[in-house]
Image (tube, rainbow, N blue to C red):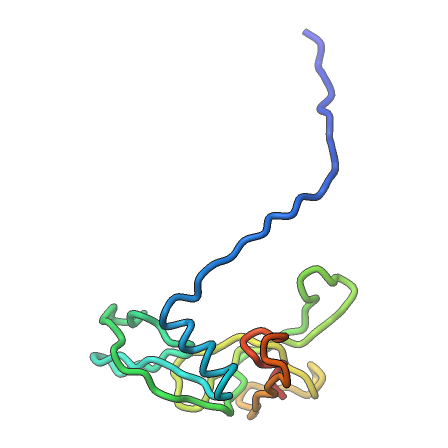
Length: 143
C-alpha cells in the first residue's frame, strides 16, 4: 500500500460573531462609558465585592443582589509585557488591577511606565476615552 502525502491548503477565514454582555455586564459597560465610573456586585452572604459585577458570588454561589460603586483608582496586583493580539512586533504592558473597594481584579492595558518601574501595590488610575465607543469599556488604559 502506497503512502500518500497530505495536501495542505493555506488560507484565512473570517468568523464574525457577537455576544451579549447580559443585563449585569451591560449596566457595568454603560456606567463606564456614560458616567465614567465602575460598578461591582456585593455578595449578601460573604460580602465579597466582584468587579466587574457578577450574577452570583464565585465564593459561596449566592445571588449577588447589591450593586456598589468601586474605584476609579486601584492597585496593581500583577503585570506583564506582551504582544497585543494580531500585532506580534509590538509590546504593551498589561496589568491586573484591584479597584478601590473591590475584592477581585480587572485586566487592562497600562501606560506611562516601563516594566522595570512597576511593583505590586503601586497605585493606578483609569484614563477614559474621549470617544468611549472607540476603546474597550470606554477606558484607553490605566496609568
